[in-house]
Image 1 (cartoon, rainbow, N blue to C red):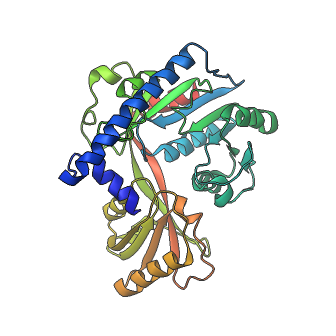
Image 2 (image 1 turned 30 degrees about the vertical axis):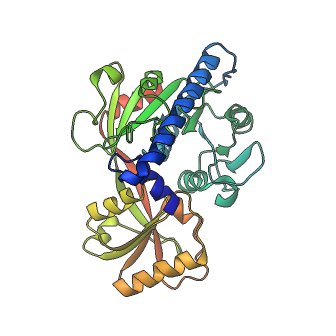
Length: 357
């Protein structure tokens, strides 16, 4: 966590003067990164690098930046829309954080959860627990995992979680997400910034979804010229429900109002979870941010419980993504996972039409 915080301080426009020499080195490295990106795009355009086509519809959900923009909630929402309209969707994920060495990993066969977060990664297991009736596969070669899903589960639509940069697989639709507050991070290319690709690569999108939408017409830095021809959807995350990790009891989020809580998360933007809790009316007495995809140990759980006792918190809260990695065999206080839903504020008809076509 310390290294991660230091990195973001260095690339921040508000960096300290003594961070500037390191930032200059990162800026130099970003030029080599750009050359590598340009060569990669040229190689795919010239078919030097192959891009394979699957025998079903492929929908990619991704972004231009490092970190979270709400990709996984959007992927789950798409799967539920497809399922509700008689389609047979499947999800292909990178399985980031998992340690499996297998080329194809079936996390969920549409009925049963088959792999742990340690093997398949936290996001894939979280989706499997929420959806259950959608096959979810993990593997670095999404063409092969896609073929497996078509052959063994009869899927007619595959959704790529974080697939905008995965050019080795052709897709029928590219959904590009922008965080309304910071659509391009600090505006610089990695490693001097948070951009995985130059802004101009937004042209590969078929439509744009603005997440964490807060009311302005466009996010800062996004011009009409950049997204003028794209259908535009505006969405935000909201709390849906609470579930007791020990007994499965489900509570309404209204029960958090004016209650002191302790919360923790290991997500790309940990402050987002705290702000959502505060927006729901909860009083966050203590918040424990961990690095993205953090593996929780017994000492972490004890520290969280200690802070809850000292603050008199009524609830200990975490995200669904974190909950799949929390071992509560020795806990003495109840822990709850918070289900988050992506709510479309503007463009619901456009979104459904694009997904179902």
